[in-house]
Image 1 (cartoon, rainbow, N blue to C red):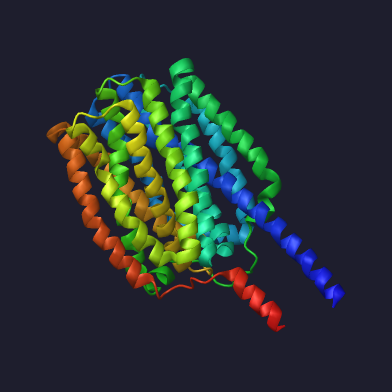
Image 2 (cartoon, rainbow, N blue to C red; image 1 turned 30 degrees about the horizontal axis):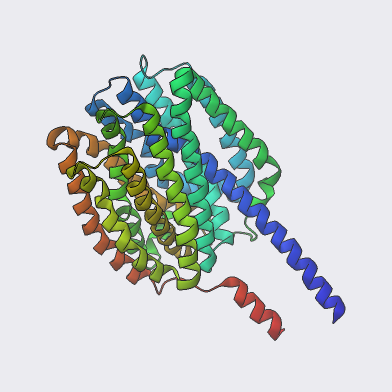
Length: 427
C-alpha cells in the first residue's frame, strides 16, 4: 500500500511537471504568434496614418489577416505533417523562418515601399498562422473538458501580451528608431522566444498515435459543424471592427502617437486579465455554455462605450483608458468562454485541423472588419460608424447564444482531474 502511494506521488509530480512544461510551450508559441498579429492589428495602420496615408489605403491593411482566415485550406496538410514529422520540430522551423523575414522587413519602410512592406507582413502572418496549427494540436490533445478554460485563458493572455509587444511596443520603437529599429527589434524578440521554446519541443507532441489522416470532409460531417462555424465567424466581428477603427480615430482626434500606443497596451492587457480572471473561472465552475450565455450580455452592452463617450464630448484620455479598459476586460472573459466551447467540440482525431479551421472564422471576420470599417467611416463619419457597429454586435449576440445552445450537448464538459480521481479510488 505504501509503495503504491509512493508510486502515485511520483507519477503525480511527473504529471504536474509535464503539464507545466506543456503550458509553458503553449504560452511561448501563442505569445510568438501575437507579435506579428500585434504589428498588423494594432501598429501598422497607426504608423501609416501618422505618415499621412489615406483611410482608403489603410483599408488594404485588412489583407494582412488573410493568412489567419485562410489557414483552413492548409490546416489538414499541416496537421498531417505534424503527425508524420513532429509538431514541435515543425513549430521551431516556422518560428526561425519568421526571424529572417523580420530582418528583411527592416529594409522596406512603408513610407517608400508600401506594397512591399504590406507583402512582408502578410508573409510573416502566414508563417505564424501555420505555426498556430501545431500549437492548437497540443492544446486540443491535452486541455479539453473544463480545462479548456485554462488553455484558452493562457492563449488569450499569451497572444495578447504578444500583441502588446508587436503593437504598442513596435510603436514605441518606431517613434524613436524608425521602421528599421522596429523590425529588427521584433526579430530579436522572436529569436529569444525561439531559444526558450527549443528545450520544450517534446512537450508539444500529443500523447497518442494517430491512425487516420486529417481530412476536411470528416470535419464537415461532424455533428454541429455549421453551428460551431457560425459562432466562430460572428462572435468577434463587432469588437474587432471597433478596435481597428480606434487607431485612425485616435490620430484624427489629435492625440499623440505615444497615447495611441499606451491606449492599445492598456486595452490589450485588460483583455488578457479578463480572460484570466473572468473567462477561466467561469468555464471552470459554470461550464462552457453557461459561461458564454452569462458573459455575452455585458460584453455586447459595453461595445457602445466609444460612441457614448464621443457623443457626449467626454472622450478624454482618462475616460478612454477607463471605459475601453472595462470593455476589453469583459470581452476577454467572453472570448475565453467561446473558444472553450469550440475547443471541446473539436475532435482529438484531428488535433490541429478542427480548432484551426474554426479560428479561420474569427480571422475572416477580422479581414472583413479591417477592409470595411475605415472606408465606411470615411463616408458616414466616425460616430455613425461606431453606432452601426454597436447595432451589429447586438444582432450577433442572438446568433452566438443560439449556436452555443445547439452545441451544448455535443461535447464532454466535465472536469478530467475529478474523473481520474474517481477511477483511481475505484481501482
